[in-house]
Length: 216
Image (cartoon, rainbow, N blue to C red):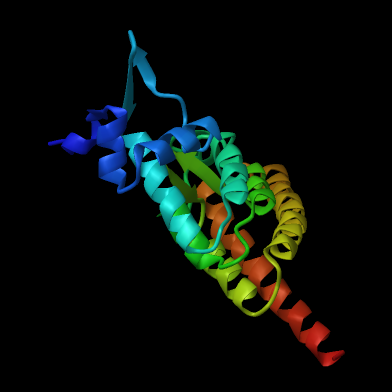
């Protein structure tokens, strides 16, 4: 059975009461573009659960020290993000586990680093996708590593720069392994390629790290 809040609509006063704010604040947020326009039915403006979720997110981000201007920039980046189906693909095989996050949970993961610029970069790279009022990170492993790097003092923007380079190398390696297999063992099932490629890359990267650490 669906949650009644998913389909409920509110007049402005009802929305304000549900969000714990004043009608004047709702009107101010609407004028600033922090919430999308309501559905109009004659002279009546109807708001829904998405507006309520956005108001609760605004309140949570304000509590975390974000400014209204910063939240407006985040909302613009969020609204321009690609849908999760476009980023993750439909039925494409993957070993990665996506992670669903609210905007405030994302802010908690990357305290002080969730800026409009970083959010836009994450959406552009496809690390994040939008799904209704939530965000979806494409990979639990990448999310955990990114959080750890930021907590070690690496700026999130630098994490993205490194990730962009790693992706380029990873795409080249994937192409190399696929081309080699197709040229010399075309009858080999495609699913055999992934574990073989991962084993080679893991071993070579481990030895490369050994060589790099010996130089320090």
